[in-house]
Length: 114
Length: 113
View (cartoon, rainbow over the protein chains, first blue to last red):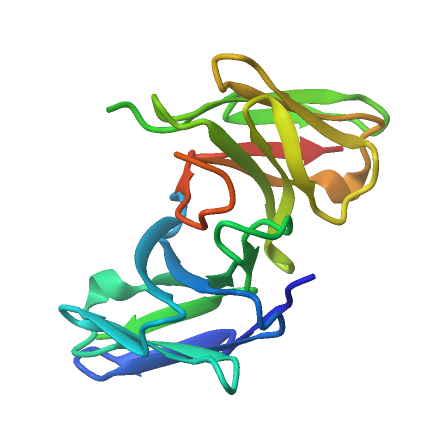
């Protein structure tokens, strides 16, 4: 089955600086890579995703990159703000096929220092 | 549109008891997945149901089971509870199976004493 590794487990950055979270996956059949944000005491919510035919995707201050050859994908947050403080989960799945469900990384606790 | 609804939100059980958790998906969503969230292990996949059929199952013992009804509502059951089953159990719905685009409920926090 799929295995997703996520680093770092905790990331502390100054407000206004950038943050990068990196993930690797093991199953070359995976073709959909969503990112979820979970604020303290709340449910995880999908914030951005990437598909295997797209190398980079951007949505305002967040962007995702995907390197299928190396099986790496990353989340980039620029100009961080206090509301970015949360736990971020990367995930991978063979969308439309396979039978493994969505596999999550263990999460990155992002702390924005004022 | 109403979101994913999970009941109960909090519950306390003792070792050896069983528990049933309920999940109502977003209207029109036919796929329901269940995840166990713990501080050390993150989000671990339990199982996914689509059209009343279990499509796939994670690496959990047989004490963990579930089902889905014709109205897409789902229940999960844990029998012979152990201390290690204490966790937040999250239900997520999606329009179809294996999409990865999940809409989560608030979760049911289970404490086993």
